[in-house]
Structure formats: C-alpha cells, structure tokens
Image (tube, rainbow, N blue to C red):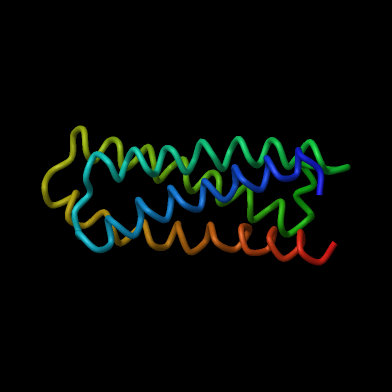
Length: 126
C-alpha cells in the first residue's frame, strides 16, 4: 500500500469518525447542538479531501457508471445538504426543528456507509 493510499484511507476513516460522532451524539440526545454541526462539517471536509485523494489513484475517477463512484458522489452531496441544513437549523431554526432534525441524520449516515463499506471491500480484495 502506497503512502498516498494510506493518507486517502486515513482521511476517509476520519470522515467516518467525525460524521458518526455527530450523527450518533445527536441521535442519543434527540437535540441538534452546535458541536454536532461542527462534527458534520468535519466529516464532510475529511470525506471530500479523502475522495479527492482517492480519485488521484484511479484511472477513471469520475465514472458515474461505476456503482461505487455514483454512491460516493450521492453520499457527498447528501452530507453537504445535511451539514448546510443543520447549520441553518442551529442558526435560525426553532426548538421544534432542533428536536426533530435527528430523523434525517440517520438516513444520510446509513446511505454514506454504502460507499464507505464498498470502498473498504474493494481495497481489501485488490
């Protein structure tokens, strides 16, 4: 495994760590807090950086006919929408919105796991 592959995998794993921390802490508390939003953004930034790094290792990085690439792109967009929405809810939202936000978070996290686990599997079988 090359140093660049280790860096890429580390960045993606940091995305898993931060995003999972934010989502599960919010799930447990049933209330969206500022630090959850910070964790969402950190997860998104690590995932974006890791994805860019991984794309440098691929011969065809933007092939949306590839299931892993397609689900990864959808997951990144969902994470971005999730982080923006969470930011707006914390900044301008009502208490009701902060209490109900967690229902969307778990769905985005579960979808995000599809390309994460798929990429892990692909990395282990090559």
